[in-house]
Length: 502
Image (cartoon, rainbow, N blue to C red; front, side):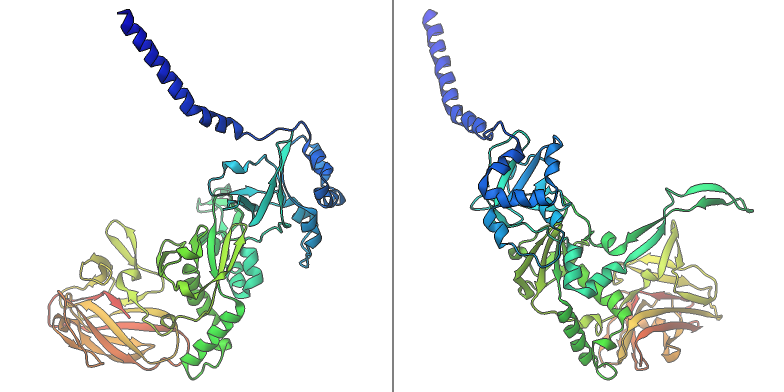
């Protein structure tokens, strides 16, 4: 029995020795990770270091040395004397802001960084601290020395003056005036119902409010808050220069033909409502994206999958901003499909839901004649899974007209295409800008229809298409399309429906 106890004791001791020996190095590494501590104030240490003398003088000349008397702790990223001597600022940026960009009101340890981290400086900007092959960098400037831990802070030496980086909005303002203008003009005023206070009632018993109004920028709401600073949020913005934009509009004008000779002929309303929203949706992405990560198919900041050309992005144009980064296009052209491609209006997009199973025509859709509600019907054969449908009384012969508009249309020859179901049927006249294109009985959609191009449209489970040439669009603008009910078709169940018009 004693022998067994003895053997067990020996085994226990050996296991303990083994565990201790295996972990000794780990514990030593853990404790050795703590910085050496020096019983000296941070600013005193900086003043005593000769290679930081110009930085110290610069701080004192701008009366910033008093911040070190507050009892707070700081981390300094100090450019050495050689870096300050080589620094020449021609921007007129306030020196105080430049200096504050080298000071963070915290004790920051680079060893806590796995890849990168944003650190807010006293300039209000967030600097990017990155782990590199050679060590660490501060806003892409190598950190070449790390000090001991002083009583109230720490010093990192950097090889260059770290100019406060612009945010995406500030960079864009300098780089592309058309994008800046587009962002600026997206400001919108709204009624702040939460902060508006009731002050009484009108003669009808309605509450009267002491109204409070707020401002929201629709660009920053819908895309990214490019003018704001963040610790944990960033975006990658692909920009075109003002010169590239102007040249692209000139090429577009030449492509449009008669009546368009230069960029000045491209309507601003089309640029603001069509071109720029499309380009912004394809040019903004969440996070800091490396050039190698760009693919033909990307998920943009709006959550949509967009197609881009990675080979048209200049890899050498990369610029780090305080809330993201920027690349520029090598070449910029206006996509032809934006002004010569299909303009499609889905039938279901003409109505709004006003309750369970109840719909009403949207603002901008004019309906005259018979008063009847539209319906949004689901169908797997519809282009987007649904269509709008209106039912008429049996053998109805009265008036019914539906009119709406295609917006921002350039003058040229078009082909209008109406896709619908042959049920319910009816004979309709179709007008563009009050010019009658023709008449058609939708019951005929049940079989093949000959296109104006000579192609044969084949019916698919009750759906088919009818088309007409449109040759009366002579000016840029909105064009109206009107469907006018002429009378009941062959089928006794009459009505009107649109899958889409294009």
